Every structure is written in C-alpha cells, then in structure tokens.
Image 1: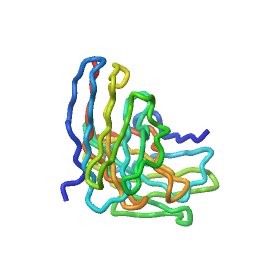
Image 2 (image 1 turned 90 degrees about the vertical axis):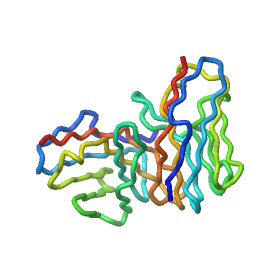
Image 3 (image 1 turned 180 degrees about the vertical axis):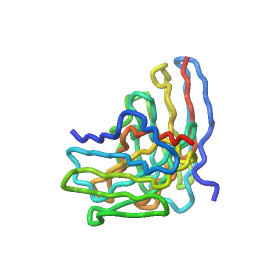
Image 4 (image 1 turned 90 degrees about the horizontal axis):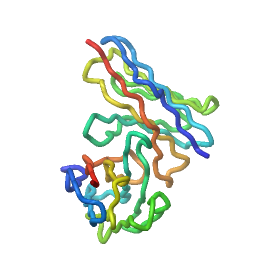
Length: 112
Length: 112
C-alpha cells in the first residue's frame, strides 16, 4: 500500500540555522509533490509544488528537492526564524487527477 | 477573496445527534475536498468533488457519513448518528485543477 513517512519526531533548531525536513514515500510514482505548513488551530497552507522533472525548487528562504530514484523529497528553510515554527506536511500525487494524500507532518520548533 | 469558509468553527454534540458541517469554497475553484484530522491518523481524505460531482467517497468511514455539493458555492458533510469516535477536526479545501489546495479553518467536532 502507499505510504508517506515524515520525521516522526519534532525537530528543534537554533534560529539562523537551516532546517531540513524529510519526506519519504513508497508505492508511489508521483507526478508532483506539494509541501504545506500548518499552524495550531488552522488549516494547512500551500507552500510549494515540485514536479517529477524538477530536481529543485526555491521560494524565498525555502528550497525543495525531489529525488524520484530515492523516493524522497527534502524541504529546507534557510536562516530559520521563530516564526517558521509550525508543522510541515508533504503530499505526493500520482497524477493531476488524484487527490492529495498527506504525510502526518513534522513539527518544527525554531528556538531564539 | 475571503478564502474557504467553514462553519461552525466548533461543534459539541451528544452521541446519536445529527451533525452538519458547511463549506463555501473559493469562487472559480473546480475541486472540493473534505478531510478529517486526528493526532493518530493525521489528515484523511473523506470525499472529493469535481464540478459539484462526487468523484470518490471511498474515504467516508461509514454510511453514517454523507456529503453533498448542490452548487459550486456550497457543500455539506453530514454525520447521522454521530459517535464519540467521530470527534476530530474536519477540513474543507478547494483547488483549481490540482494546483495548491486552499484549506478552510476547520470545524472542531466533539461528540460526547
């Protein structure tokens, strides 16, 4: 069956450092993968979409990589700030017509 | 645009009662999704619609759950009768094609 694994433990990081979150998937051949941010008591917010033919995508301090051989996506936040503290969810999708299935997310805490 | 609007924000009900959750998607979006989130299971897809037509309801846990989308600007998720194990946060999301999803703020349902 399809499985999405994200760092199960919370990730604590010092302000200013780079945070790296991992998303591994099995029994998927995703055409693309999306990353979302979720704050307590709120719905997930879309951050980035990366397609299978893209190795890397950047948006401001965010960088996402997508390795279809390793079946893995990495999500980086450079120069992290306490305001980046949230839960980050990944969601691979096999095609443009299939709905997103989300990982359980990784909780990131950036300590000042 | 006010985003995806869900109501009520919180709902506390007694076991056996009928519960109706409401969602207004973003105007112009052609997909609407209902998800349920718990600590144990994360975000689970319940059902989704494309152009108001239900496409896949295989995630609906039991016949006690039903969803409708009578027009492009409104959807409901109904639970009848409700049970304590239905307690969760229910999210509605909409999208244009399979671009990034826009989630509502969710309805926190507590069944006592």
